[in-house]
Image (cartoon, rainbow, N blue to C red; front, top):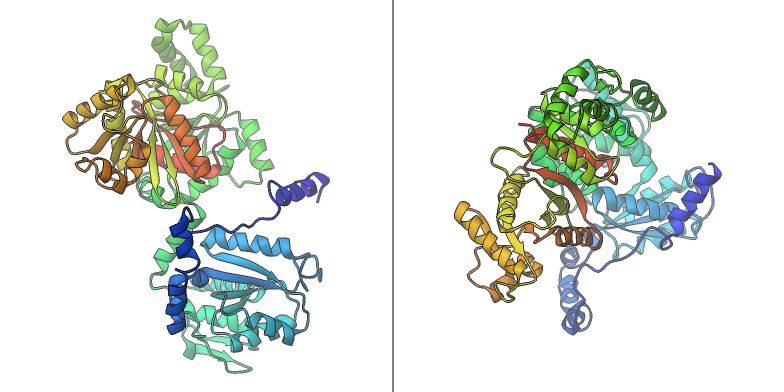
Length: 578
């Protein structure tokens, strides 16, 4: 490892606070009542329930979702026998992987004991605390002795990571081989030479995948294929897989209807900054998922070099189409059309030609305008408003739309919120607010969600008479006249918008049922501040910003967007191209 990489790794583990784990309360601890329920005397009641029925520990405690990652540090990665304490960063790493990819909570347990018998005694005594044991980085043959000993002693799942990793790889290889020869797993016969712990783990997984036990011959010893320790079996594996996908990418549930629609009819999406590494890293995912047909704007030599530098397997002309701004056959046509659009805005023919050569967002917009692309994404380089000006000049608003607007999607643990307008309209009037509501309500429906709109203000249902509150009141009247079927109310505080109980106490006759999901801010300042505060304090994952109201499917992202964020925007742009 280079010195830079070494220092980077050390900084990562040390700052802003040492380690990779913390414990957070899942219940409120805001007042004396909460404390009396969390601890004495209220805590006695679940204790009594569990004493009467131990299975209820899964109902009243975190045990059912708590795994111990246990090691003695005798075989750590490529480091060898470094001991339990030195192995702690590895165990913390495994803990956060469990949380990130499966939402399983973990305590890492480093045991200063190398004798297998004593190690078994120590770990077995932890059974009341955990719902499962994951043995990690223990040398052979001790790992086999320990796992088998713990399985005999404990009534919770016990597995050794190295063994079951082998089982996963072996099972994947067998499934692929069967697919190649056209055979079903339930029909083939299998001989296992030896029945050690790893072999049995392989057989157990293969049976779970559909292999018939009667077709398995083991040349060494009999063993139970079913442990009986899974107290809550998975009834729907497909739903479980989708749940894991949503845990890894919290935008998964919100974006699922959009991705499904995009796959049904993928459109041509042009990326203005096609030379950017994020765009190039995105393209394999776009192609694999079949959500769009990518077009990249960039210099061929630069794109080819960066594809090679990033280690990507992409073929220009097959996986993506490339538009070179220095050599495009439709350049004269685009110049002529661009000048026609911009002639009354102080743009000369020479400036139009220069814009097309030097501004990739302008070129992308011309591809969209001329029908050579179905959607565009820009904004990875430069300021949002600079890109917006070009989109407004070239694409413009759709028929029946007066002004463009933007909507940002925020995926929190508790809810998915649609917030407007934090990027486009600085001080919208009542008529503008009403149009924003109409446009964004339609946009929310693309996510498979029925919009529930709240017009937010410093005023609560007329509690303050100000220009801002009157504006929101007037907007409400316009929306209710034009869209009587839409659930909407206001003006109101944000807490009332998100908490139906509070809103009912303050205003029992509200036209909004449940929590609002479309939060309409009085101006850009309020929208931007609220969005960024929620994103940071609520650990939110963002989608967008989504440009709403344009005559074509044109979207401006921000330079901080991730590759996953670009994938989400690609699916949305492809769907909206219809």
